[in-house]
Image (cartoon, rainbow, N blue to C red; front, side, top):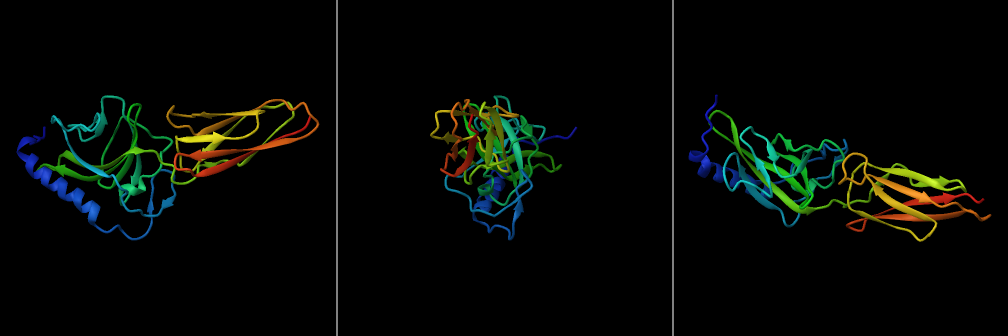
Length: 249
């Protein structure tokens, strides 16, 4: 069994991790686009946003937790208090961890330098992370990891994408569901004027990812068709519209 030297390497590891994280803030971003890893699309590089914080997590050592997230002795970023983690691929800076993935959430992930991931906790909400550095002992066994993170992450930098932007109902009314596609956000509001329809945010996989919009329309008993527009507004005021049409009786 490999011997892991924790305590005699803490000072060295702290210095290495701090330098690595500082370098990540000040070094130039690589040229070209990078794959986001979440939905297969390429995203432009972005500078790290304001409020980015750094922390070094050590396996099996007190004081190494970040709101219940820690780096364990087996080399995984993990949690024992309800965190769900989802990697979103390799990114050149935490500014590119800007969306909430829909699938592949787990209670632990294997870290890699430049890995971007999103964490969700019922009390903490969403937090976006970037693995800035990993510390190894002389046996190349990982025993520490440096993270950059941005709390209160919510996404919403671009409008939500819908699988379709118009839905048609018969005069009898009914319920239809429209799925979000592309980048996924959990925080949005819906606004409309008609009192003959109603909406609800629904989840297909995880209860904290509202990736479906349910629209219910009451029967139209008049001889006039009617329509309305639902505005889906993200927490950063990006708007997508969904038109609802209903036939006359």
